[in-house]
Length: 466
Image (cartoon, rainbow, N blue to C red; front, side):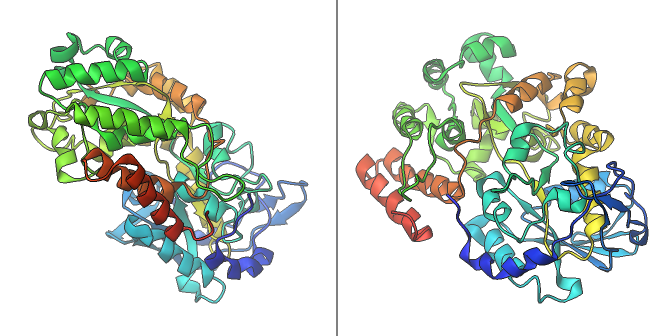
């Protein structure tokens, strides 16, 4: 289906002003240099005709984000970036302004929509230059003239050739143009408490733990054993994305009808049974109760998560946590899946196209920078070569995993990711479905009533749906 977000349609005229051209030298050469030196010769990706990006004239580089993760990556790994305060920096003579708007309640997207709709009339200092998107709503911005094709920035297929295919497919528009780039490959697995694994399974070796949860039947059997030992396996909200990443169809069909996939329905039935048996909880992601598993006293067997979870969510820097004691292990779990990822998009109308290009190339394709990110931040980076290097050396050993090297598993998982059922409605449908099923799991509604709640909520959010 070819949809357009109504609030973004008014910027269609901006497409005519999108920058064309790309550099002859596809490597990142401007990091840390004064912005005035960033105007390099360009080559049109489609036909090879010589062209040049317009000289950068912007004195302010505006970057729209929903948290400080990407900001910290730039602060720590983009040479020449000078931190001024928590929301400001400098690159050469250009002021960098970070605007952080939380994702909750669709606030980030609403804020971004308003800015991009008014991009053409915005003053030079207020123009958006870079904005970030997540997988759940990437298509909304990719299939819109508010975002620039990487080729129009001078970023070639060769520049992006070492990235995982799925990370490019997510940000391809209806014409096959790539309109974003990510430093992350967010294949994911199950992160388990090693001491609890020894207690329940008699071993904490990843190969043996994986055998105990190699598919959902074995996972459910192990969850019962976990409960019998006085632990909780995890929250039902942890398992959700594993099921939802392995569906056979999209949330919305070609008739604009909402469809609950059979694998999502299996999540409901499996989760209800495990909650009733005391093996899983219904705690909300990121809540205080959910976070208790970061310490052994919380008696949570594990979390489902990607590599960014290691550094970003497990409190390895806090004394007494399982992570600080190197007490976690990592396995693939019942099914391969991915969770999250952040894509850098260039805003059409930017007056800092050369600097934007250099930031994208440096942060998402420079192998030295990507290896730094992997080793310093325990992230799974979007480079097959870097992950192979990490998987084959002690550089990939992670202290909070007890010295385990997870990169071979993460790299293999990234190759298996299938995005054929991704849709622009995923974020809203996933959020509303989990919210509705919580009532069912906790005994406040039967399954049919919970489904009615979901259908009503999602159609209020997306009036076009039936």
